[in-house]
Length: 389
Image (cartoon, rainbow, N blue to C red):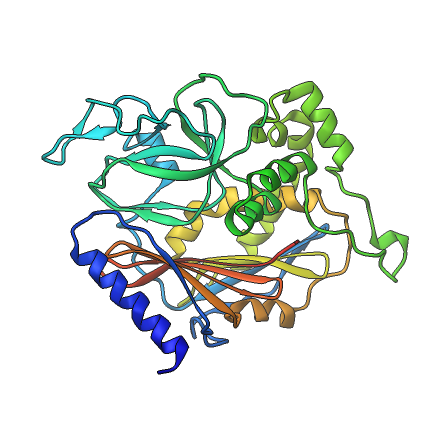
Protein backbone atom coordinates (compact mmCIF):
# COMPACT_ATOMS: atom_id res chain seq x y z
CA UNK A 1 0.00 0.00 0.00
CA UNK A 2 1.20 3.52 -0.75
CA UNK A 3 2.98 4.94 2.34
CA UNK A 4 1.10 8.25 2.19
CA UNK A 5 -2.27 6.51 2.00
CA UNK A 6 -1.30 4.19 4.83
CA UNK A 7 -0.29 7.14 7.02
CA UNK A 8 -3.57 8.90 6.32
CA UNK A 9 -5.63 5.77 7.08
CA UNK A 10 -3.76 5.15 10.34
CA UNK A 11 -4.27 8.77 11.41
CA UNK A 12 -8.00 8.57 10.66
CA UNK A 13 -8.30 5.25 12.51
CA UNK A 14 -6.53 6.69 15.57
CA UNK A 15 -8.81 9.75 15.57
CA UNK A 16 -11.87 7.47 15.46
CA UNK A 17 -10.62 5.26 18.28
CA UNK A 18 -9.81 8.25 20.47
CA UNK A 19 -13.17 9.79 19.74
CA UNK A 20 -14.95 6.56 20.76
CA UNK A 21 -12.92 6.17 23.92
CA UNK A 22 -14.82 8.86 25.83
CA UNK A 23 -11.59 10.39 27.09
CA UNK A 24 -12.83 13.92 26.45
CA UNK A 25 -10.35 16.45 25.10
CA UNK A 26 -7.68 14.58 23.19
CA UNK A 27 -5.07 16.20 20.98
CA UNK A 28 -2.62 14.46 18.72
CA UNK A 29 -0.36 15.40 15.87
CA UNK A 30 0.67 13.25 12.97
CA UNK A 31 2.52 14.00 9.78
CA UNK A 32 1.96 12.40 6.41
CA UNK A 33 4.15 12.79 3.35
CA UNK A 34 1.19 14.00 1.34
CA UNK A 35 0.31 17.25 -0.35
CA UNK A 36 -2.73 19.45 -0.36
CA UNK A 37 -4.06 20.24 -3.82
CA UNK A 38 -2.85 23.68 -4.94
CA UNK A 39 -5.25 26.45 -5.81
CA UNK A 40 -8.89 27.22 -5.16
CA UNK A 41 -9.53 26.61 -1.45
CA UNK A 42 -12.74 28.54 -2.13
CA UNK A 43 -14.02 29.20 -5.67
CA UNK A 44 -15.97 32.18 -4.30
CA UNK A 45 -13.00 34.25 -3.13
CA UNK A 46 -12.21 37.36 -5.13
CA UNK A 47 -9.72 40.20 -4.63
CA UNK A 48 -10.79 43.82 -4.71
CA UNK A 49 -8.48 46.62 -5.78
CA UNK A 50 -5.65 47.23 -3.31
CA UNK A 51 -5.66 49.92 -0.63
CA UNK A 52 -2.21 51.45 -0.22
CA UNK A 53 -0.91 53.86 2.38
CA UNK A 54 2.77 54.46 3.06
CA UNK A 55 4.48 51.03 2.80
CA UNK A 56 1.33 48.99 3.55
CA UNK A 57 -0.99 47.52 0.92
CA UNK A 58 -4.17 45.63 1.79
CA UNK A 59 -6.19 43.60 -0.71
CA UNK A 60 -9.76 42.95 0.56
CA UNK A 61 -10.96 39.38 -0.05
CA UNK A 62 -14.68 39.08 -0.78
CA UNK A 63 -16.95 36.08 -1.17
CA UNK A 64 -20.47 35.43 -2.41
CA UNK A 65 -20.77 32.72 0.24
CA UNK A 66 -21.20 33.99 3.79
CA UNK A 67 -21.37 31.15 6.31
CA UNK A 68 -23.28 31.37 9.58
CA UNK A 69 -20.73 31.65 12.41
CA UNK A 70 -23.00 33.22 15.03
CA UNK A 71 -22.68 30.06 17.13
CA UNK A 72 -19.03 30.85 17.92
CA UNK A 73 -17.77 33.08 20.74
CA UNK A 74 -14.60 35.16 20.41
CA UNK A 75 -12.05 35.57 23.19
CA UNK A 76 -12.72 39.30 23.51
CA UNK A 77 -16.46 38.66 23.91
CA UNK A 78 -15.92 35.88 26.42
CA UNK A 79 -13.45 37.72 28.65
CA UNK A 80 -15.41 40.97 28.56
CA UNK A 81 -18.64 39.23 29.58
CA UNK A 82 -17.03 36.94 32.17
CA UNK A 83 -18.19 33.82 30.29
CA UNK A 84 -14.55 32.86 29.71
CA UNK A 85 -12.13 32.69 32.65
CA UNK A 86 -8.34 32.48 32.34
CA UNK A 87 -6.13 31.78 35.36
CA UNK A 88 -2.57 30.80 36.12
CA UNK A 89 -1.97 27.06 36.26
CA UNK A 90 -2.56 25.84 39.82
CA UNK A 91 -5.12 28.53 40.65
CA UNK A 92 -8.09 27.57 42.74
CA UNK A 93 -11.56 27.64 41.28
CA UNK A 94 -10.63 26.07 37.95
CA UNK A 95 -12.41 22.72 38.34
CA UNK A 96 -15.86 21.34 37.55
CA UNK A 97 -18.27 19.31 39.65
CA UNK A 98 -18.69 15.71 38.63
CA UNK A 99 -22.10 16.44 37.13
CA UNK A 100 -20.49 18.95 34.76
CA UNK A 101 -21.51 22.16 36.50
CA UNK A 102 -18.93 24.88 37.07
CA UNK A 103 -17.44 24.62 40.54
CA UNK A 104 -14.97 26.35 42.83
CA UNK A 105 -13.47 23.37 44.57
CA UNK A 106 -9.87 22.20 44.25
CA UNK A 107 -7.04 23.29 41.95
CA UNK A 108 -7.22 21.10 38.86
CA UNK A 109 -3.50 21.53 38.11
CA UNK A 110 -1.23 21.44 41.13
CA UNK A 111 2.16 21.80 39.48
CA UNK A 112 2.22 25.57 40.02
CA UNK A 113 2.18 28.47 37.60
CA UNK A 114 3.94 28.03 34.26
CA UNK A 115 5.23 30.61 31.79
CA UNK A 116 3.91 28.71 28.78
CA UNK A 117 0.63 27.35 30.09
CA UNK A 118 -2.52 28.88 31.49
CA UNK A 119 -5.87 27.31 32.38
CA UNK A 120 -9.10 28.34 30.65
CA UNK A 121 -12.77 27.56 31.28
CA UNK A 122 -15.49 28.30 28.75
CA UNK A 123 -18.61 29.01 30.86
CA UNK A 124 -20.66 30.11 27.85
CA UNK A 125 -23.18 28.16 25.83
CA UNK A 126 -21.16 28.70 22.64
CA UNK A 127 -17.91 27.11 21.47
CA UNK A 128 -14.98 29.51 21.91
CA UNK A 129 -12.71 30.46 19.01
CA UNK A 130 -9.08 31.27 19.86
CA UNK A 131 -6.53 32.72 17.42
CA UNK A 132 -2.78 32.55 17.80
CA UNK A 133 -1.42 35.93 18.86
CA UNK A 134 -4.44 37.14 20.84
CA UNK A 135 -3.25 38.83 24.02
CA UNK A 136 -4.55 38.28 27.54
CA UNK A 137 -3.20 40.70 30.12
CA UNK A 138 -2.78 40.16 33.86
CA UNK A 139 -1.71 37.23 36.02
CA UNK A 140 2.00 36.85 36.61
CA UNK A 141 2.81 37.89 33.03
CA UNK A 142 0.92 39.01 29.94
CA UNK A 143 0.56 36.11 27.49
CA UNK A 144 -0.57 35.44 23.93
CA UNK A 145 -2.50 32.44 22.65
CA UNK A 146 -0.09 29.97 21.07
CA UNK A 147 -2.33 28.26 18.52
CA UNK A 148 -5.69 28.55 16.77
CA UNK A 149 -8.24 26.21 18.32
CA UNK A 150 -11.88 25.78 19.39
CA UNK A 151 -12.89 25.20 23.03
CA UNK A 152 -16.22 23.34 23.22
CA UNK A 153 -19.15 24.11 25.48
CA UNK A 154 -18.94 22.32 28.83
CA UNK A 155 -15.28 21.34 28.44
CA UNK A 156 -13.15 20.59 31.49
CA UNK A 157 -10.64 23.27 32.53
CA UNK A 158 -8.29 23.46 29.56
CA UNK A 159 -4.49 23.57 29.82
CA UNK A 160 -3.86 26.37 27.31
CA UNK A 161 -0.51 26.72 25.52
CA UNK A 162 0.63 30.35 25.54
CA UNK A 163 3.71 32.53 25.09
CA UNK A 164 4.89 35.27 27.40
CA UNK A 165 5.03 38.81 26.01
CA UNK A 166 6.20 40.46 29.23
CA UNK A 167 9.73 39.26 29.84
CA UNK A 168 10.56 41.21 33.00
CA UNK A 169 7.69 40.32 35.35
CA UNK A 170 6.77 37.15 37.25
CA UNK A 171 4.55 38.37 40.06
CA UNK A 172 0.89 38.43 40.97
CA UNK A 173 -1.12 40.95 39.04
CA UNK A 174 -4.73 41.68 38.22
CA UNK A 175 -7.04 38.97 36.94
CA UNK A 176 -6.60 38.19 33.27
CA UNK A 177 -8.69 40.45 31.06
CA UNK A 178 -9.32 41.07 27.40
CA UNK A 179 -6.70 43.33 25.84
CA UNK A 180 -8.52 43.73 22.49
CA UNK A 181 -5.09 43.17 20.97
CA UNK A 182 -3.52 40.72 18.58
CA UNK A 183 0.26 41.02 18.36
CA UNK A 184 1.82 42.20 15.13
CA UNK A 185 2.94 39.79 12.44
CA UNK A 186 6.56 39.23 13.45
CA UNK A 187 5.60 38.28 17.02
CA UNK A 188 2.60 36.23 15.91
CA UNK A 189 4.75 34.30 13.44
CA UNK A 190 7.22 33.25 16.16
CA UNK A 191 4.35 31.88 18.26
CA UNK A 192 2.15 30.28 15.59
CA UNK A 193 4.83 28.87 13.29
CA UNK A 194 8.16 28.81 15.13
CA UNK A 195 6.66 27.82 18.49
CA UNK A 196 9.65 29.42 20.21
CA UNK A 197 9.43 31.51 23.40
CA UNK A 198 12.88 33.01 22.94
CA UNK A 199 12.03 34.17 19.41
CA UNK A 200 8.77 35.65 20.67
CA UNK A 201 10.69 37.79 23.18
CA UNK A 202 13.20 38.80 20.50
CA UNK A 203 10.40 39.89 18.16
CA UNK A 204 8.72 41.93 20.93
CA UNK A 205 12.00 43.77 21.62
CA UNK A 206 13.06 44.09 17.99
CA UNK A 207 9.87 45.11 16.22
CA UNK A 208 10.13 43.23 12.93
CA UNK A 209 11.91 39.96 12.18
CA UNK A 210 11.80 40.67 8.43
CA UNK A 211 15.20 40.99 6.83
CA UNK A 212 16.00 44.37 5.31
CA UNK A 213 15.95 44.49 1.52
CA UNK A 214 18.41 46.45 -0.62
CA UNK A 215 17.39 50.00 -1.36
CA UNK A 216 15.00 50.36 -4.24
CA UNK A 217 16.48 51.05 -7.65
CA UNK A 218 13.97 53.89 -7.85
CA UNK A 219 16.20 55.90 -5.55
CA UNK A 220 16.38 57.14 -1.98
CA UNK A 221 12.89 58.66 -2.13
CA UNK A 222 11.48 55.13 -2.35
CA UNK A 223 12.98 54.19 1.00
CA UNK A 224 12.62 55.36 4.58
CA UNK A 225 14.01 53.78 7.76
CA UNK A 226 11.50 52.12 10.12
CA UNK A 227 9.40 54.47 12.24
CA UNK A 228 9.68 51.88 15.02
CA UNK A 229 13.40 51.24 14.73
CA UNK A 230 15.08 49.08 17.36
CA UNK A 231 16.51 52.12 19.12
CA UNK A 232 13.05 53.67 19.50
CA UNK A 233 11.62 50.45 20.93
CA UNK A 234 14.57 50.21 23.34
CA UNK A 235 13.96 53.79 24.48
CA UNK A 236 10.25 53.05 24.94
CA UNK A 237 11.10 50.02 27.08
CA UNK A 238 13.48 52.05 29.22
CA UNK A 239 10.99 54.85 29.89
CA UNK A 240 7.51 53.31 29.61
CA UNK A 241 7.75 49.51 29.74
CA UNK A 242 10.47 48.28 32.11
CA UNK A 243 8.96 44.77 32.22
CA UNK A 244 9.07 44.62 28.41
CA UNK A 245 5.30 44.31 28.31
CA UNK A 246 4.09 44.08 24.71
CA UNK A 247 1.00 46.09 25.54
CA UNK A 248 2.93 48.88 27.26
CA UNK A 249 5.51 49.06 24.45
CA UNK A 250 3.09 49.11 21.53
CA UNK A 251 0.39 51.15 23.26
CA UNK A 252 2.87 53.75 24.51
CA UNK A 253 2.42 57.40 23.60
CA UNK A 254 5.30 57.37 21.11
CA UNK A 255 3.90 54.37 19.24
CA UNK A 256 0.28 55.47 19.38
CA UNK A 257 1.12 58.84 17.88
CA UNK A 258 2.43 57.06 14.80
CA UNK A 259 -0.03 54.18 14.64
CA UNK A 260 -3.39 55.81 15.36
CA UNK A 261 -3.48 58.17 12.37
CA UNK A 262 -2.18 55.36 10.15
CA UNK A 263 -4.97 53.02 11.33
CA UNK A 264 -7.65 55.69 10.87
CA UNK A 265 -6.52 56.43 7.32
CA UNK A 266 -6.51 52.76 6.32
CA UNK A 267 -9.91 52.25 7.97
CA UNK A 268 -11.36 55.17 6.00
CA UNK A 269 -9.97 53.95 2.69
CA UNK A 270 -10.98 50.34 3.40
CA UNK A 271 -14.57 51.32 4.22
CA UNK A 272 -14.82 53.36 1.03
CA UNK A 273 -13.32 50.58 -1.12
CA UNK A 274 -15.65 47.90 0.27
CA UNK A 275 -18.88 49.87 0.31
CA UNK A 276 -21.59 49.15 -2.24
CA UNK A 277 -20.79 45.46 -2.71
CA UNK A 278 -23.66 43.54 -4.27
CA UNK A 279 -24.02 39.86 -3.45
CA UNK A 280 -20.54 39.71 -1.86
CA UNK A 281 -19.10 40.42 1.56
CA UNK A 282 -15.61 40.98 2.89
CA UNK A 283 -14.27 37.83 4.57
CA UNK A 284 -10.55 38.59 4.81
CA UNK A 285 -7.49 40.48 3.63
CA UNK A 286 -4.13 39.86 2.00
CA UNK A 287 -1.37 42.14 3.28
CA UNK A 288 1.81 43.37 1.60
CA UNK A 289 4.71 45.48 2.85
CA UNK A 290 6.27 47.36 -0.02
CA UNK A 291 6.33 44.90 -2.92
CA UNK A 292 6.32 41.81 -0.70
CA UNK A 293 3.04 39.98 -0.16
CA UNK A 294 3.54 38.71 3.36
CA UNK A 295 0.36 37.79 5.20
CA UNK A 296 -3.31 36.88 4.91
CA UNK A 297 -6.21 36.32 7.33
CA UNK A 298 -9.42 34.91 5.83
CA UNK A 299 -12.51 33.86 7.79
CA UNK A 300 -15.61 31.75 7.21
CA UNK A 301 -17.91 34.77 7.41
CA UNK A 302 -17.98 38.51 7.15
CA UNK A 303 -19.25 38.61 10.73
CA UNK A 304 -16.12 36.86 12.06
CA UNK A 305 -13.86 39.02 9.90
CA UNK A 306 -15.38 42.25 11.21
CA UNK A 307 -15.11 41.07 14.82
CA UNK A 308 -11.33 40.75 14.36
CA UNK A 309 -10.75 43.49 11.78
CA UNK A 310 -9.82 46.43 14.01
CA UNK A 311 -7.24 44.59 16.07
CA UNK A 312 -5.88 42.81 13.00
CA UNK A 313 -5.51 46.12 11.18
CA UNK A 314 -3.59 47.61 14.08
CA UNK A 315 -1.28 44.57 14.07
CA UNK A 316 -0.59 45.07 10.35
CA UNK A 317 0.11 48.76 10.91
CA UNK A 318 2.53 48.11 13.79
CA UNK A 319 4.39 45.63 11.58
CA UNK A 320 4.57 48.18 8.76
CA UNK A 321 5.97 50.81 11.12
CA UNK A 322 8.68 48.37 12.20
CA UNK A 323 9.74 47.67 8.60
CA UNK A 324 11.62 50.00 6.24
CA UNK A 325 9.30 52.22 4.21
CA UNK A 326 9.71 50.83 0.71
CA UNK A 327 7.31 52.57 -1.66
CA UNK A 328 6.92 49.79 -4.23
CA UNK A 329 3.41 48.33 -4.35
CA UNK A 330 2.74 44.59 -4.52
CA UNK A 331 1.11 43.28 -7.66
CA UNK A 332 -2.39 41.86 -7.81
CA UNK A 333 -0.94 38.69 -9.35
CA UNK A 334 1.36 38.10 -6.37
CA UNK A 335 -1.53 38.71 -3.99
CA UNK A 336 -3.71 36.21 -5.89
CA UNK A 337 -1.15 33.50 -5.19
CA UNK A 338 -2.07 33.82 -1.50
CA UNK A 339 -5.50 32.40 -2.32
CA UNK A 340 -3.87 29.10 -3.29
CA UNK A 341 -2.87 26.27 -1.00
CA UNK A 342 0.85 25.49 -0.83
CA UNK A 343 2.11 21.99 -1.54
CA UNK A 344 4.01 20.35 1.28
CA UNK A 345 4.07 18.16 4.33
CA UNK A 346 0.76 18.19 6.21
CA UNK A 347 0.70 18.32 10.00
CA UNK A 348 -2.62 17.89 11.78
CA UNK A 349 -4.05 18.10 15.27
CA UNK A 350 -7.60 17.00 15.99
CA UNK A 351 -9.99 17.00 18.89
CA UNK A 352 -12.66 14.58 17.62
CA UNK A 353 -16.02 16.22 17.13
CA UNK A 354 -14.66 19.68 17.99
CA UNK A 355 -11.93 21.01 15.71
CA UNK A 356 -9.13 20.13 13.32
CA UNK A 357 -5.96 22.23 12.97
CA UNK A 358 -3.55 21.71 10.10
CA UNK A 359 -0.34 23.28 8.91
CA UNK A 360 1.36 23.01 5.52
CA UNK A 361 4.84 24.37 4.76
CA UNK A 362 6.31 24.95 1.30
CA UNK A 363 9.61 26.78 1.36
CA UNK A 364 8.93 30.00 3.26
CA UNK A 365 5.19 29.79 2.67
CA UNK A 366 3.23 28.44 5.63
CA UNK A 367 -0.49 27.77 5.87
CA UNK A 368 -2.61 27.18 8.97
CA UNK A 369 -6.29 26.29 8.70
CA UNK A 370 -8.71 25.79 11.59
CA UNK A 371 -11.83 23.69 10.97
CA UNK A 372 -14.80 23.41 13.29
CA UNK A 373 -16.19 19.85 13.12
CA UNK A 374 -19.60 20.35 14.73
CA UNK A 375 -22.33 20.58 13.55
CA UNK A 376 -20.68 20.54 10.12
CA UNK A 377 -17.10 20.88 8.93
CA UNK A 378 -16.36 24.59 8.51
CA UNK A 379 -13.01 26.34 8.00
CA UNK A 380 -13.27 29.16 10.52
CA UNK A 381 -9.89 30.78 9.87
CA UNK A 382 -7.20 30.47 7.21
CA UNK A 383 -3.78 32.04 7.79
CA UNK A 384 -1.13 32.03 5.05
CA UNK A 385 2.18 33.85 5.48
CA UNK A 386 5.56 34.32 3.86
CA UNK A 387 7.78 33.59 6.84
CA UNK A 388 10.50 36.03 7.77
CA UNK A 389 12.84 33.22 8.86
